Each structure stands twice: as C-alpha cells, then as structure tokens.
Length: 71
Picture 1 (cartoon, rainbow, N blue to C red):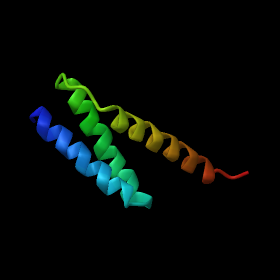
Picture 2: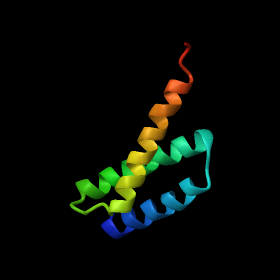
Picture 3: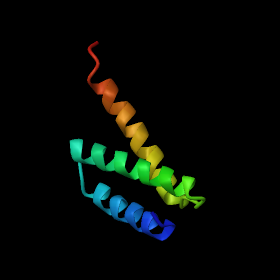
C-alpha cells in the first residue's frame, strides 16, 4: 500500500473515531493502530496528532478494562 493511501486511511479513521463509541470505537482504534504501524514499516513518519490519538485510545482502553474488574 502506498504511503499517501495509508495516511489518507489514517485520517479517515481519525474522523470516524471522533464520532464513535463503545465496540465500534475499539475496532476503529485497532484499524488505526495497524495503519500507523504500516506507515512506519513503509518508511513514513506518523503525524504527531495521530500518535497522540493512538496513545489516548490505548489509555482509554486500559481505563475501561479496570471499570469491569470486581472490587
């Protein structure tokens, strides 16, 4: 896949994540994370705002996992 296509896909996923929630948001994050990895593997640089979004979503998923733990 070409680098410009991967960057466009990441931008599309970013927009879709902004309006999603729940399981859909989780699945979109997985797609975004794979796309960012493919950008890196293709020799491209991942824009800072997409790296930040990826990390924010990872933290969100970690927090959600603690919400389901019994006390």
